[in-house]
Amino acid sequence: MTSKTAVVVLSDPSTGTEEALGRVFNALATAWEFAQGGEALVLFQGAGTRWPAVLADAAHPAHELYTAVKKQVATVASGGCATVFGATQGVEDEDIKQISQNQAPGTPGVASIRELVQSGYSVLTF
Image (tube, rainbow, N blue to C red; front, side):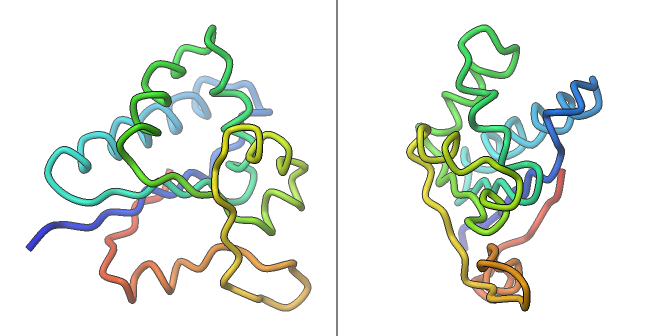
């Protein structure tokens, strides 16, 4: 049986900290690694929906890794989170599908972690 792993990026690039960079860098490296022998998915959620616009910059230290991951790993973003955190344009510019299955009250719909688990994904958060 092939493993299925969802890597959820929650860190906020706007903090500009090494911790935020370390989280997204390791999230992408983990997704890439799991994709080598199974199915992987990257989900940008919460303030993490700001990352695609930042990672699109060729000068960013994680740009090359991000580009490699996008070529072989399904990459999605929480639609409601992108709206709340002002990241919709950056997500759209990177052609990342927005998902909003969790219609939690007071939200425009966010990505469903429950649906990932029910679909057989192991979920890792960064």
